[in-house]
Image 1: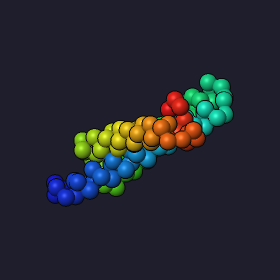
Image 2: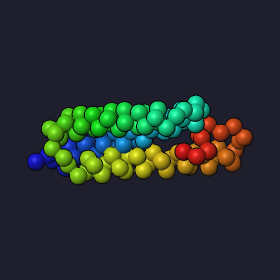
Image 3: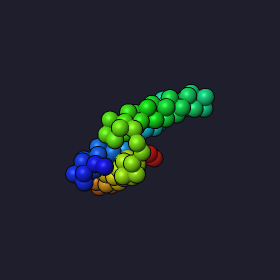
Length: 108
């Protein structure tokens, strides 16, 4: 059984992994907004993204906890994605107040 400090570090790695996954999907959504394409291409993009995400998270889980599913890892990934979304919303609000140039897309 891992010590609490090791579990805390694994939780932080899981948060970072969740942020990476959320940021990757945000990039795909921005790409879709700028370049319109068919539903078939969107479906292929989604399948490839989620397959890549599954492999990425499996590798991270295997590296951190020898492949056993730890609920704090799953919660860390969810928390990381939620934190990244909240940060993007805050940045969107700040950019809306302080300038006309918007970096973050309107509907993300």
